[in-house]
Length: 83
Image (cartoon, rainbow, N blue to C red; front, side):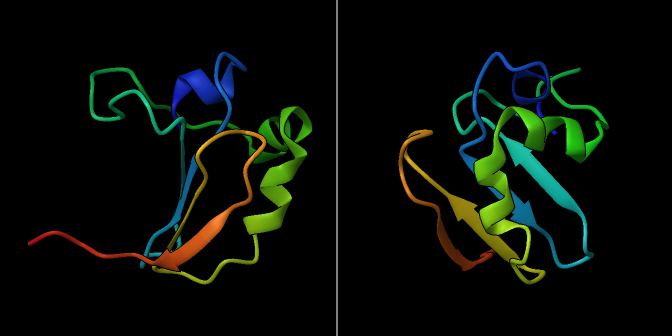
């Protein structure tokens, strides 16, 4: 999970349930691949800050949920991997 989401600095705009069953949550703005941008955090803590995440937690593996802003509806699609 991106630290910007975990610490409440930014709202989650991207949720990935990858094909291995892992959950990745990002702000959709900052690069999650930058050193120390992400960490392991308790999902319950983030849901307390943003209950709208509950809307995507039944998403099947290999799917991604995105939204344009915290006020927007989640859109779910199959996860497409780049070659």
